[in-house]
Length: 200
Image 1 (cartoon, helix red, strand yellow):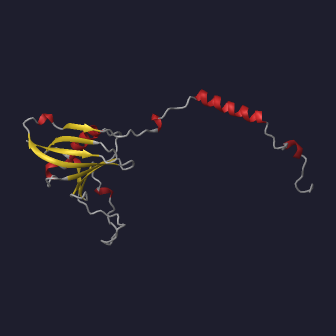
Image 2 (cartoon, one colour):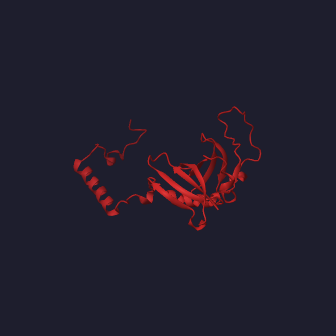
Image 3 (cartoon, rainbow, N blue to C red):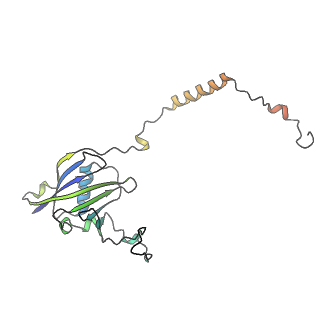
């Protein structure tokens, strides 16, 4: 049985790298679940792989779910030279049905792994080599790791203010305003008998 060795980079963290070994008959869904743990990702966000050429241009797209139904039945026509076109012509596949060995066609195959399209993280995966193993139970495995992803803080992760302390601060501010004795000279009772039409 064959396994593939990949090297994974994340360019937003200078020293981030992972070396991973995965069986050649692994589907991309299992590869995604393994990478999720190995890379230290958080949440349950949308993810996709893109099979690329040597210049990292996307050739095929592999998503966690079938997105073809989301496409408009009659897509608008675009000029082939329209640089602003949002129409994609990439062949699309679903992770659970896509097997690694069917997509590794280049001895230096490049793959993009994109996670969380709201707060996007893009990982660059480079195929290193294929080798044989008689211990398939040892895969997938991470053989080298360096660097960690920055932790994304949410509102619940931030320290919550103490209610009593906040009220104490408000009380102190009100006392300070009273001490300054602000008075604009306006007394509402002085104008109660004023008729706006007859007194001017």
